[in-house]
Length: 88
Image (cartoon, helix red, strand yellow):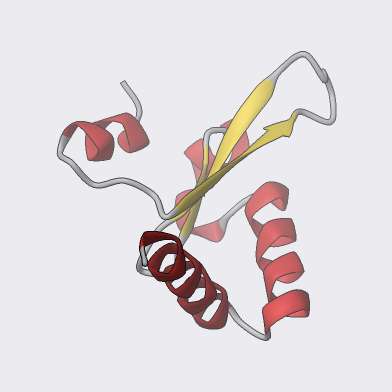
């Protein structure tokens, strides 16, 4: 059982998840997650081994979000606003 699976069992869910393919074997798919505390996680072997140092998937997604929204906080606020509008 993975760390992320334990968190989901405990009722803690990521704010957003993406599926990313392995660069070495495109039939392998990893789950990249963004959590409410602005941290990313990934199910790839590098992230599992290095943890908070990240992997190319988490670093790439963070850079993409920063380029589009300025920072992860702004992105999370935008997601909250969209969810609020959808519920209105």
